[in-house]
Length: 631
Image 1 (cartoon, rainbow, N blue to C red):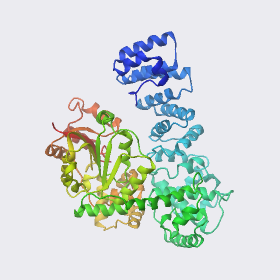
Image 2 (tube, rainbow, N blue to C red; image 1 turned 90 degrees about the vertical axis):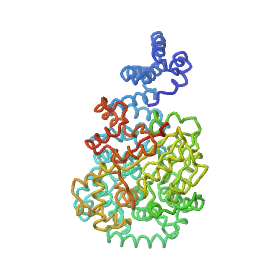
Image 3 (cartoon, helix red, strand yellow; image 1 turned 30 degrees about the horizontal axis):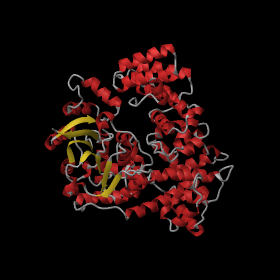
C-alpha cells in the first residue's frame, strides 16, 4: 500500500503545512493540523490526506477508513480515495468491500491501469457463487488491458464462467466421461451461440486456469470445433462467430504450450486441415488457421510469414494468430544478436541449457512493476544500483526489476538463447532500456575480472538448485556481490515437494520420456501411476497446466532440494546473513504470532525449520529469501 508519496496535487498545495509534517515523519502533528483545517472547512482532499497520514502512522486502519469514507461521502466519484479505501479493506481481509471500491475506481477512471491491477489482485484471491453483471463489465475492461498482470486470475474467472447463464450449460458437459458422450450432449443444443460470451472469450488465453475439469472441457470443446471446421458445419447463428471462438481457444492452447494430448482421430483431422491451409496459403480461412492453432504451432506452417502478412490484425481477432507468427520470427532474428560470455563447459549446465532451448520457461505477457519488498529493497531506489539477475529465463523478473528500479543498470544472464530471445523481445516491446542480456553459465562469471564485487543486488531465484553443485554456483555469485550488497536466493524445499518427488520416482522407475507427447500422455494416465492424494496436490500447482512448466516441475534433468538447516549451513559457510523470507503477509503474520517469543525478528532458521515441518505447504514454490554479506 503506497502511502509514501504526497497527498496529491490539490491537497499538497492546500495542506502544505500538514504535508511538511507528513514528509518529516511527524504524523501526530500532521493529523492535528489536518483535523483543525477540516473542522473549519470539510474537504474531500483533506480527508484523503488525513487517511494517508493515519496509514503511514503504524497502519492505523480504523481512523484511516473513517477519513476516506468521509472523502467519498463528499464526492462519490473521488476515485483516488476509493482506490486507497480498497487497499485498506484488502489488507484488513474485507475482500468484497475491497472489490467494490476498486471496481468503482476503474469504472470512474478506466484509463488508470494501476486501478485495474489492484482490482485483479483482489478478485484473483476469491472464488464466486454469483457475480454482479456490473462487476463483469468492469472486469472485461481489465481483461482487455495489455498492462495488467493477471497470472493468478484463472480460478476466480472459472468460478464466474461456470455459473454464467450462457456458458454454464456448456461447461456442465465437462462431467461427461469421454468425448463421445460430450459430443452427444453438445448435439442437443440448437446452436453454440452461448459460447460467444465477451467475458469468456476475453479471458480465454489471458491466464492459465489451474483446474483439471476445465482442461478436460477445453479438450472436448477443441475436438468438437475441429470436427465442425473440417466438416464445414456451421455451429452459430452468425457464421463469423466461429472465428471468435477458435481464435480465443487457440490463444489459450498456445499459452499452455499445447500441454493437452491429441487423439489419433484429431491427428487425422489436423493433417487434412494442414493440407487445406497450405493449399489456400497465403489466404486460408481464419477459422481453419485458428483451429489448427489450437493443436499445433502455426508459425511452423511452410508459408507462415506470408499468411501473417495477409491477416488484418490490429483490433481484429486475427491479431491472435498474426502476433504468434510475427513474434516468433522476430525472436529468431534476436537469437542471432545475443552475446555469449565465456563457455558453457559443465555437462550439467549443457543438459539444462538443452532443456530450456526446447522448453523455454516461463511464457508470460505482463509482469508486476513493484518491488518484491519495499522494506528490504527500498534503499536501492534512486541509487543507480548495479543489479544482476543470474538465471533470468524469459525475462519476467529482470523486467520487473527494471520497472521497480528505472535508474538501475540491470544485467541478466541465462543458459538458453531461446529464453533470452523471448526476454529481449518483451523488453523491446515494453520499452525497457536498462537491461543488458547475455548468454552465460553462472560458473563462467567467476572468470570475468571486472565483475568481481561489482553488484549492489544479485537475484537468483530457482536457478542454483538446477546446477551440478549449487553451493559452487552460489559461491561464484558471492564473489560478484559488493561487501554491502543484497542477495535474493531461491532454492527448492524437500519438505514441500513431497508430491513432486513421488512423481519423480514414478517417472524414473517407468522410464517415461520428457518430450511433449510423453508428458501429455503421462498426465492422461496419471491415475495409473500415483495415489489420489498425490494427484490432487499436483493438480493444485499452476505449472501442471503448461507443457514447459510441467517439464520443469516433474521432468527436469537436474534438481537439488534442501531443508532449512542445510540452507543455514550454506549461509554460514559463505559468510552470509539471513534477512527475510519472501512470503505472503498472511503467512508471515501467522509465523510471527506463533513464534514471537522464540524468534521475534523472524530470522532464526532453526525455528523456521521446525515450523515448516508442521506447515509443509509453506514453501511449495521454493524457499525464497534475502541475505547479505556478514560485515
